[in-house]
Image (cartoon, rainbow, N blue to C red):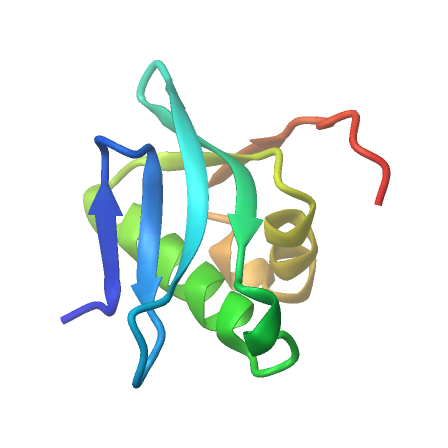
Length: 101
């Protein structure tokens, strides 16, 4: 069973952070039958603990399990994908977010 929960009412995938009430979230919007990953948030106090990578892996696995495709707009998800090309079967494109890192 995945640790990722899809919360369509909030437009995000959520990962509960062990031992707390906090969550990490990957926000998305739907574009036809594709999921556009727009933004990833991890509370600052958990920075550097691998939570965002755990979230990204779970989100990509969840998208794969549903047979859908992802469009990456989020800079973090794009960087994660660059390091994990094994997800090329679900990534259907990249969108420039216009954000400056």
